[in-house]
Length: 260
Image 1 (cartoon, helix red, strand yellow):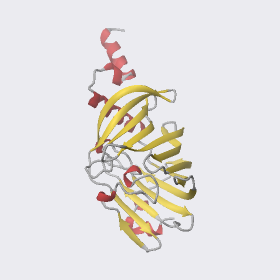
Image 2 (cartoon, one colour):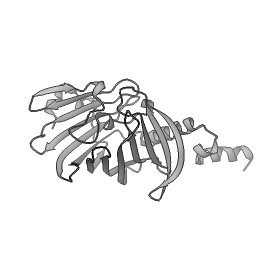
Image 3 (tube, one colour):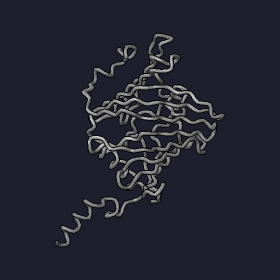
Image 4 (tube, helix red, strand yellow):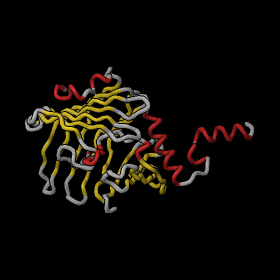
């Protein structure tokens, strides 16, 4: 193998280590690689249990269905429908994530029988009383952040990249996020969120990853811990199904109140 062929092979095996990159460039390349590896999922559906836990350890459980559609050259569309308990049954949340522009979000409240648009200035608000904010439950588009690789370190026995993400949107509820990405699969393992005072606000942990369609990794469990309130929200994901035939017509705000 001649010298030039060796360089090509080295680049294809380890693109981040073969080229000298600045911390900002390396952070961006990690985010792009994560995004590239999940491209092409088309659509998926899933069910999940959302468990809310207060500081005293008291729990309430909600059963939710999720539908997500991949939109070429833009962010994803998603529809979240609450099935149980009775107090939230029929509540539905529709989100159109965009790469650059502000996301579009609507919430249908059956008690009021109306669709409420979520203002971009309220993206840091709590989603349905959980520790997830509205901005946490949209697809995390590469263009929404600036990046800086900080270091490599092990996370629970797995080599990980630690990358700082700074939201581009000044209306974000966070000054920055620290994300631990698995170095082999380029999937997030942990996220620390810092509030507008730059104090640690929340930590999100991903567990029980499984691979679907021989490509797409999804976590079975996501736990969001609020360090400032002592509250937690646990999402247990089940019944993932990919390429189910969803289309734009399944994500129409005019039919949001009829979501089933």
